[in-house]
Image (cartoon, rainbow, N blue to C red; front, side):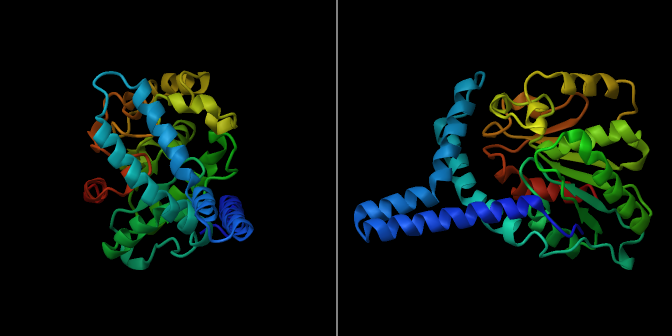
Length: 295
């Protein structure tokens, strides 16, 4: 397991800054309606940002657009999920569960868990609990540098796959959220590793880029724009390589990866998680159950 996480330190700073700012506002204005309102706005301001993402998603969606009620339910689910991940698991609990490769995993399919943009291995905590209960060895990576090129993540994925291969004696399943799916596709290309993978499952991965990435200016953010030369070259290179069995989960209410077709791939098993938002998609019971059955 990695011994440090730059993303965890960054999120710790963000969480503490928000808490101090909310407390300072409340002390300054006192326990008045304006004091409580301002403190709540500071703490829950992320919900407004999420709301803007959902508005952009629906405004740019091709017909039929997701129903307003479905979008609202997806927004609410994301509002509840985001603080658990970005305010707790990733900043403070990313080392709570170690990578798990005990001797009894030999001969049982293992898993490599690859997170997405602005995330770390703490994202996968619920998955790791389920995998341990089913006695499937697993490794969860930290993709760093956080705002580096997707190309730099290949050695991290290679090391994780090699560990699971050695412990289980079998090609692993790779489960990837968001940008993690692109990182795995790049690793498959650079390592010519199709024979070393049993199956790839992507959860809300912008295989065709995403409209929202136009607002990102980090190297990995630019690699997820629509269109861009990096993605086009990846597609051309993959056409000359052996295909890897792949399942792509997508959602019509995904507030990060849209239009929705960009989360699908030709010749993959493309499955709809109806009404799911981007982060919520990764923890839908039907998504987790179907993926675990791949093992």
